[in-house]
Image: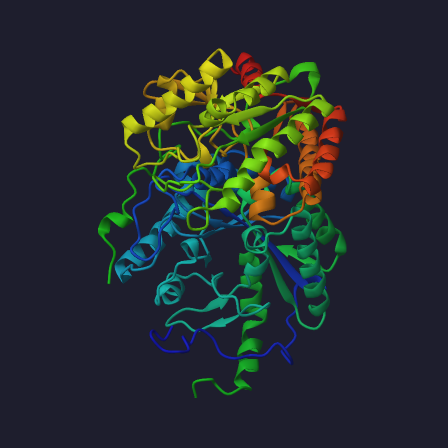
Length: 308
Length: 309
């Protein structure tokens, strides 16, 4: 990015209208990916100068316990429902989970889920890191996921959504192809980086279960209805040019007994609809890089650069 | 700019938790448990019965529901008292009508100020557990250990005098503990604590002074969270509780193991006239449901402990 400038220069303007048609495999209109955040929050993390972790003195019992519920109870319930309806997860992973709860990571890996990095812990933030420190967490992420799962991560969602001005350049330099941190579009698109090729993967933050339950205060059934409406709209629009719908989840929220039933109905609905390419983020990125990236660049070329 | 190198060191990064209170336990790998009568879902109602001094304390933090306006805050002082005088009796009547037992987490100040309430609770067969002294009796790291110990013992002894025996269970205000709390509870002779929200079944916690059972009361399944925080109606709450029951009943059948559905109530929230009919109707349906076993915290712990060892 262009550090310190009013426009960070992340990507070029490319309006939703008149885009080249993005085609998904088998003529599907919307690529649907489910993104469970498999996280570990520390009970007593060191303080980052720019962001507190827990709001209460340590131990913040409710905050910590709520997250720990994910690894004891919520993950297993959520994973079972996803598997039942044919949804593989694309995991936003606190990579230290590979050490703390290898049973959770192994379960996701055996189910055929993809892993990308969400930092070391969700209680360690990138704010204030120098380049060497940021390289260290990227290299740690690549190594840790490879050792635990055999997978090479293709994507990044910044830990607790904390970034530095160099994050995108660095992940592209390390060979990653997508970022889940940019929320400007319902289709993938090129991102400006110094080296490599990086795309933005729509992560649909507005329908993240955390937003649904704690920003918009939805009931479980209201949240389920919201996801179905989101899906219906994107599936309809995707007939013109393929769209992406992400369902970002935290099993300490969606895996609660009062929420999982209505959520299962969402998966049942999408699986039965027929217009969805039910897939993983890395597969979407691979497909877009091979089949849509050049068209997106050509679309962009029709418009003047905002900073020209 | 760079961060202190210690920020990128992870001394507790290894197998298991980053503390010693309990060990990981994936739900599908638990030893199955059964509840009395083959009922698949234990319903555990917990009521917070609290007294808020009109002179709030912020040390170590101000309790949720406490005074909000400049002194004297008649509005919140009296609205909380409404819960105790009126709302709580609506709840007691609703429990009696449905024929169910609940766990009442009682501030010691309630027993001192209104001994007849303790008698009314016990007469109906509910369990009383300790819930600190009054709503200025919050606990968090930073509270001096001797002060915390004195607070726990005062709450225990005041209730013991009112009940005739020491309460077996404890719940902290806002479920907030210090690093010392589990150990101090063991030292004070408590069998179980109801603060942790990381599970759906009881489990054993270990302190330097010995073990204590942790009985999870999911804060998400509470009138405070659903109504006061998330601004939902009692009709929606009822639907959510019944959706939870439906799910847990199916899961209990699948895993051939009992499940627990907790629901935490606050007299000044649920006990309002316009919420009570919906609450009573919910309670009636839950009580009539063939899947449910209404258990106090103590009954749940005893039943679980017999099978867990």
